[in-house]
Length: 113
Image: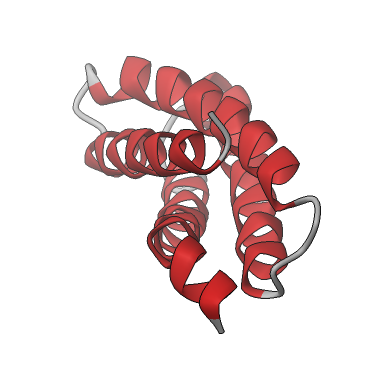
């Protein structure tokens, strides 16, 4: 149980990020110019998958938790950068996603400096 307490803030950030990324991908598919959002959707889906995996491995106290956290921070940074571009054009779901990704990346970096 101690490992779960140690990782809990990061687990929570990863699960939140995965949820927000899934929402962003879904919302992007409803936009008029979906073709412009292909990279955003792809990164949203990859980020959600990695965040979910990282949260699961951390909850198990897995030996590769820190490695997954490093990868998770990288994909979160990439997703946030892409979403920030679309947020500048008024896409609120992308703004929310970028914020969740930045928070998650920060928490992951705390776990794997």
